[in-house]
Amino acid sequence: MTEFWENFPLSQLLCEEGFQCECGKTHKTTLKYVDIARGALQNLPLRVRQLGGSHVQMYCDQNTWFAAGKQAAALLKEAQIPYDCYSFPQKKVYADAAPVGQAAMHFHCKSDIIVGVGCGTINDICKIISSLTGRPYIIVATAPSMDGFASDTSSMVVDGLKSSLPASSAQAIIGDTNILAAAPAEMISAGFGDMLAKYISICEWRISHEINGEYYCPHVAQLVRNSLQKCIAYSGKIAERDHDAIKNVMEGLTLSGIAMRFAGVTRPASGMEHYFSHLWDMRALEFGWEEHLHGIQVGIGTILSLKVYEYLRTVKPNKEKALATVAAFSVKKWEEEIYRFLGKSAQNIIALEQKERKFDPVKHSVRLDIIIDKWPIVQQIIAEELPAAKEISNLLKKLGAKTTPEELGIDIKTVKQTFITTKDIRDKYIGSRLLWDLGLLEEAAEKLFM
Ligand SMILES: [Zn+2]
Ligand SMILES: [Zn+2]
Image (cartoon, rainbow, N blue to C red):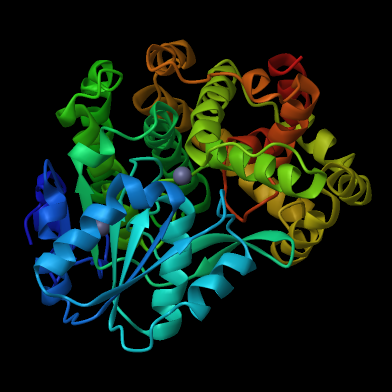
């Protein structure tokens, strides 16, 4: 073990024995190969063979077939590797049960390896099929649009509810920058937006470590910071489709997945900004709203979260006020509001609270004392980790990306309620929970989103 492993190039992070870390964990991933370069698709037959594949089951959709599927098929043919390809016939493949059924029904029983060509949904479906069939899986990325390439969960709609399903992660990731750089601009902006989230996720991870004693690894955090910095440094060149800039985004997204595997929690890559996005997804599902790309929503969620932390920097904790506000808090009223806001998706959130009991006044008062005691450290973490909201908004604007919820058709009243509800959707300690503990959540929501 060396203390500098977080500065290793991505390929060296994949070593099988992992890294024994001073945080007490051995950081390991099941990912074996990552090829992110110009012409990386040429490596597909090699990776298939290295993973023991002799007959490929490929999945793509109407767009990704032309973006990379056709070329991947030609390479397999040239290498004399038999393959079956199923291309989803529908215009848009939704992350729900039907496409998983389609994929299963078209799975060729002879195939011993899966190749997914796409990103987002195709990747999520292939991870499930890989897990069900026990076959290894290679993802050929067609856009650097989100950080799920190296993760082992699939974000799916299950029985009408958005869920994170356990699945198998890819064992090889192929990101050919010739293909990635030709992806639609909105998808590239989305990937950059998903990277920006890491400012908030690392900051909140540290804060929760201080307040709740939650597990934290400074080396995993540094790994993520390093790749975020690389993305930011080259961000001015993303719009012109510069291969190095696109490569940095794809590497950053892959690395975020590796960091989550290393830490065994999603903390390194996701925080309050992701919960804005998850809640908008839940509302879209429940009320038939228009859906937007995950990373676009996360980018906007990052700007909103940075504004929340800018507010937090002006706060001086007031114990009496915090205790009085929490004493007046009604769980029954909270439940009604959650139902009104999210419809049937509220069930899971209410069940989560019954298990976690974050609103318990005794637990609250214990946390509050720690918060007051550690307030200078919390302030220092915010100052060290976070850039100004304006700065990040400008970076996204330069890419031509959307930077406000209004541009997604989400009104300010909904944004305010979304912010308040971010504290409830997972058992994760984030900025909105910190404000609730301080008795300032409603006040902050009024000030920030009016
Ligand atoms: Zn560690
Ligand atoms: Zn994400």
